[in-house]
Image 1: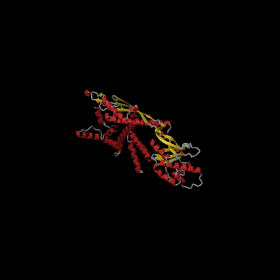
Image 2 (image 1 turned 30 degrees about the vertical axis):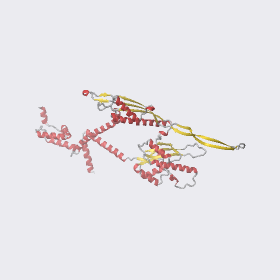
Image 3 (image 1 turned 180 degrees about the vertical axis):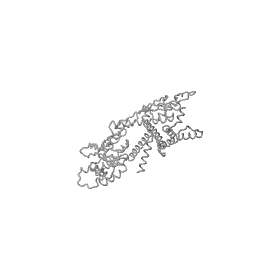
Image 4 (image 1 turned 90 degrees about the horizontal axis):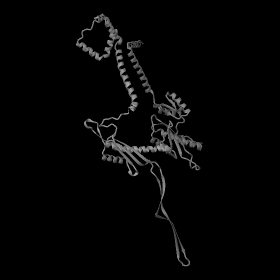
Length: 508
């Protein structure tokens, strides 16, 4: 106890000899260090919470919470108490333990629902059990897909009837709980649709709707109404235009250089789906359908008469024609290219030289070939040669950057980094000075006492003769320890009594 008390008293004594600015700086450093340690330790101790069970009934949720309390496991309740989240590193073990202990009674079930005895079930209950089993199996399969935490599947399977031939097929709805930062594209959603459709009888993939927990429809627009089909058509048109534009610009960049050309493609496409049937008759191709012959005997003359009747069938061809959907009917290509730049005389600005007609003709041909231009169907190409107002290697004129966008995106981060750097340098400098002084034997008090004792023992008799060696030593020490020298001089000014010798010299 005495050692601890002496340590505290010594620390208080040393802090008491610090200046006001040094105390403020030491307090700021201590506070910042404590806050940083607390925040960092809290962040390290915080576990990522993942879903343990979802869509729980009140009974299963209460039993699960009671068991988790016994195991001293942290948990969170969401979705109105129907979803339980636990630390990620404990999720698998807890899920197995709670299942083995029979805590969860109505979790996702599949075809294992028929493992027990099924005596006495009515046809209605059997259909309900089968529907529940199929939904459970689909849920289990979907949940193994990367990025999906949980899923729910709802099926509507109309009962077939000979009295209602107009009954539509089965339909399905899938609700997905995605992982943090996970977003599915159209192909992945279409994959889930195909998975469900091929697992249920009489279910078409167009009748499968996929949603997330926010209620957003993830189903690709190709299965939507007319508005959705319009969006798909627009996306297909943009894809065609982008592909053709990339081909043309790629060739021009290799010929003229990067940034020396601009290509825009406008594609007109036909999305009409036309079905037609045609019957073609060929009179030249005659086929005998039937032939009838009769013979009769004339009693008077004794001759035989023969009659024949032949039915011919004209050859007929049936054709069912479906026109191509998404066919390009016209292309309009606009091309703008830069010219040449020749160095100016006597260091003047470069001189712009337009392309020759031969060069423009060659570029026109390669662009037409790249995009597949067809003049028979009415395709057009516009080719313009004019100087660009952008940076180039010869003139060195740089295109003005988007300063507003750059400041908005990086300004805040840059200011924070600069402030942090200035604060770190300031704290390092002042803290190093404070600690260096405080860690010396006796600290500031020893320095002041030594100086005071020296002044009491002898008075100040004037400055002694200083030779070059002493001056060199003083300069070297001052350059190596500027802060220490400043403190000693400040102590002299505040505490030393210069005595009568200085007063006499001052009177002179």
